[in-house]
Image (tube, rainbow, N blue to C red):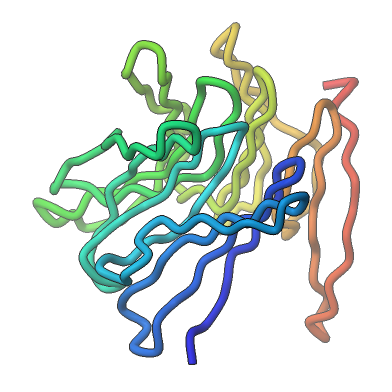
Length: 212
């Protein structure tokens, strides 16, 4: 039987992954809550789709030939039902982390030539200009990230530090959050965090960004 994972919600649409029994191929399912209709991206399980993100009529995702291969990032337009390649580079593996308006955030690490230390850096991609730039500078990999409006929040592994990046001013500041929470979502000036205790019981917290 297929496996399911990574549920996303945007207004009246649900989006999730369906993984075939081999675990090497998948497809994306978009479900309209009002009409009950479904759309599929990769309906015949010919590729492996992962990390889907949705905003309005845009869906971004990583796509590769199988689950063991590096991913490239694509954009799918629900109105035109057309797919557009955004980031295709065999030297890197890219993972979409979020989309808002005409901005995408993604993490990237180098696969060729091999490096001694693998670091997942966070990047900002502008759909209007088709350009991107690195916004994380720490040598510790990005653990979680979210975007809303002109704000990006992300955390790093090992140190567990949290950062707030402003797209307009291109500035970054530290956030007073105790690790090891994980950023789940960002909405206006509120950030949702999840923290698990020693018994692996998770609690949900809200962090107010209005004063940051």
